[in-house]
Image (cartoon, rainbow, N blue to C red; front, top):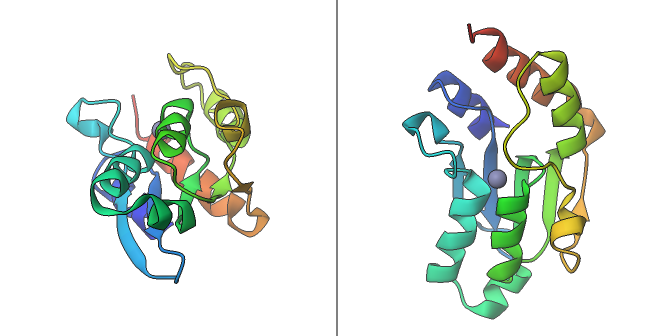
Length: 147
Ligand SMILES: [Zn+2]
């Protein structure tokens, strides 16, 4: 949630993710950097690629990605391709889609799908009801600033 807020402060979409080892150690973290103009700069995608370079297959399988928003299909695919373990998200893609629609944001060019539709072997937990309002507020703040 802090990384998502940090992204928002930098003028980017409020999404943040943390990669945690099986032993509970924070290995890497990131937030959206699509304001650069590269719409693939999602933190979940970056973490998947980071893990492929820095972790063994066993370490990847035992790791968990905690993320403010459920992985999009691109990131879910990357997560599964590199063999990462569990995903724990605060807000679901379905919740996010509903919020963005209410805010009048045009639909994305990529269809919204739950992670299990893209990567059926990945264990997924979420949404986290206690964080829903916070995530919703971050997205309202981001999109209401737009013209
Ligand atoms: Zn993504």
